Length: 230
Image (cartoon, rainbow, N blue to C red; front, side, top):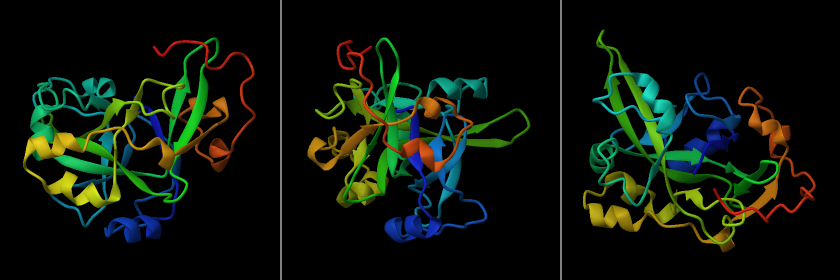
């Protein structure tokens, strides 16, 4: 799964990397992006502008927006079939910019790790988005991050990982209409292009947003990789 990520670069870097307009009045670097926060996304219908949607997809037919907290992720294997996600997958896809994401190893103690791409700091996770209207006609725009099976680097920590779209396929993810083509993009990212290190458990607190969260800490000594994935 993907329950936290990092987008802590300057707005100019996002603008240059994704060829999109970023306004510093709205964008602030975030070392601890968490569910229910309004976070930057690049949507297929407005790819030249950085939008800010709630993390946690609320389907258009939902009676209560609180359902979004349970839909921060959508499985690549079933996204084209599940009622909550299939319409968004067909018509409303997005890129979720990041320069790292976190995952926790389940065991005697939950141990957080940061995963990142060393040679290309910014990358894009595959997302879908939706519009939801309340009884007063107000719109809530939200998104979900797609996940797939873990690559070899991720497997000792967790059996799932976010779908990272390769740079050459980002436009295809946003614009393609053939679902078979889109599904082919939803594969584990090559482990040889990624790195990871253990970080402080202070990242567990979504209220903490500072650079110290991404600093490597010594490996947890007590049988870190003995427990099976949940």
